[in-house]
Amino acid sequence: MSDAAYRHVSILWASPADAVELAALHAGLFDKAWDAGSIACHLQHPGATSLVARLGNPPRTAGFILARVVADEAEVLSLGVNRAEQRHGIARRLVQALIRAARKAEAQRLFLEVGERNAPALALYTGLGFQEVGRRKAYYEHAGGTEDALMLALRL
Image 1 (cartoon, helix red, strand yellow):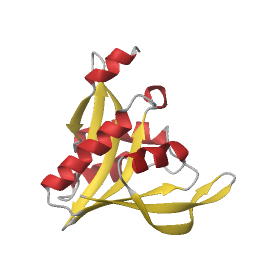
Image 2 (cartoon, helix red, strand yellow):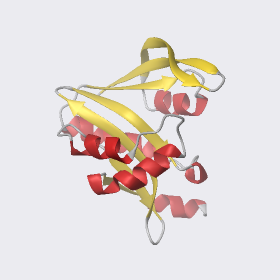
Image 3 (cartoon, rainbow, N blue to C red):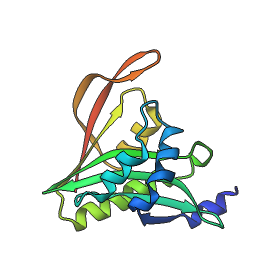
Image 4 (cartoon, helix red, strand yellow):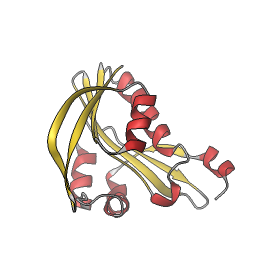
């Protein structure tokens, strides 16, 4: 796909009808994937603030961000972009759209966790102004061992 095609990414609210498709995408990206039932349950929750990125004709889901807003805090639960669509700014657009939605919901801070060795994600988040506020030792389990999670926050 040409770089010009990525200028026409639509960011839309995710709904429970998207659960099966999002679960399939999640499974292709993460070792411990959410199943469709878990995603549908999340999307039905009143605090769910989750989005999908669609592109192409016919439109296909290229990425998602699953988040929630509770009281004055927002939290990213999962963010993923189809491997074939990565490095074209889709994740950045999803996070930026979530930031706007969280501000509109009057959240004061947005939190997330990211693996300490996930350089592309860390570059994305720090580039958007997130700062490290904590660390969870051996939080992520991988085939080769464990990895600490960095807890990041963004003041909204």
